Image (cartoon, rainbow, N blue to C red; front, side, top):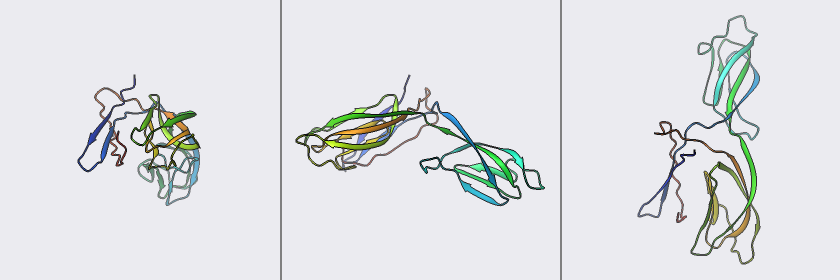
Length: 190
């Protein structure tokens, strides 16, 4: 069951605040090996050049005279792995969201009525304009179309087909002790 909640608040300045709550995702563990010299610090990135949160680091082979001990002369935090007086071949692991793929959607808004689609089983990570529809005004990313988490929207007369790519959704436990809060500042009326 998806317990993702979305609450919108309207402020007198026309700012929409969207609160999105998420728990831990059912992800896949990804590991690779990395050789680090003594006194090194590297930032770990995925194939899209995005930083990832490292979840585990272990020594496969030590090349230095001194033994490598976790949190003593090697370790990790956030997307960084570091060594100090430890040269080793390390196994570095992080969690990866599962890709649900891309699909083509049509969003058609009028000058006064926005259009929105919500994906209940995923989080949008990419939205691309494919083609304008007949009688459409010019669609401009962030102004007349865009996305936030699991919702894609169009407004101000933007009528087009879009390619929307989705990753598997976060599932929130009851009580949601580990929640993320996002504030979306926009002129979008929803």
